[in-house]
Amino acid sequence: MNLTLTKYVLPLKHTFSISRESHNFQDSMVVSLGLNDKVGYGEATANPYYKITFESMQQEIESIRTEIENYTFTTPEDFNQFLNKKHLSNFAICALDLAAHDLYGKILNKPLYKIWNTDNSSYPITNFTIGIDSIDNMVAKMKEQPWPIYKIKLGTDQDVAIVKELRKYSDAIFRIDANCAWTAEETISYAPELKKLGVEFLEQPLKADDWTGMEQVMHASVLPVIADESCIVESDVEQCGYHFNGINIKLTKCGGLTPALRMIKKGKELGLKVMVGCMTESSVGISAIAQLTPQLDYVDMDGAMLLSKDIAKGIKIEPNGNLIFPNTGGSGITLL
Image 1 (tube, rainbow, N blue to C red):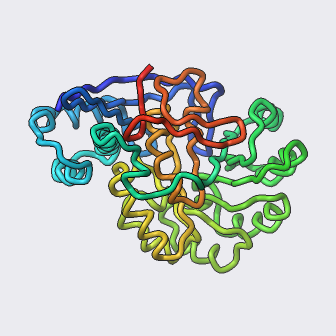
Image 2: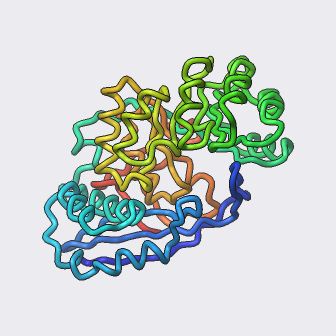
């Protein structure tokens, strides 16, 4: 296979802030895998919380470049198994795994959702994320992007007041993501008022390892709670099943579509709601997530919508949230 690694600095429409960081640009690595006349594309974005940079991923992959280029490609699953023996970070594996799936589907000339025997006539609508900002700016972002479901980032000293104010300007469904910023007591206290304000669920209110606190929340919260930072890899799903109502799977964190498919299956077996989220990827990463949507209860795949300039075309998200799937195989990605 022919391997290419490309760095992109993705510009955001607005400064994006969560409880622990803010940024105006998103570093991203796009991997291309070529075989014969087909090219598959995958992506993983840098992330300071997990100490991942473009350079760290590049160094990892370059260390096994010869092995990748000499690899006899058969299926993405076999390729993922090969990668897992090479001691790469899950972010680096994700980019390669997504590229392998896109390549495989293009070879077969079938979109991934069809290869997986799923029906794309029904799927959840993505939420649109409103990052932490002044209330006026958060309202302005909502007005700029009317949407049926908003994910609102919180983790301030006026969280409930923010939601009360935003509710004045929209009748959309609200989802709250505190990114580990609350205590169990705060979560339990905020939940009744947030429920009255039309909040659907709370995402990762507590620190990732606060299992004792999450047990309290599970018993006392009037709103469902979805794991994010507590659910990174496959082995986390079972523990989350005892402490959350659902899980948010991130392809970059778990290592791509191959493990994500197993996590979706395990989550459903445990009776959990299953969500897949993004990490501000371009349409390269978002188009891969879109292939999973027929299997999901919720999805957060607005990454490319947050960019002022995209680098690829693939899945198209219409103004009402409906998806137009590419006609090409795999994830249907073409670089611009």
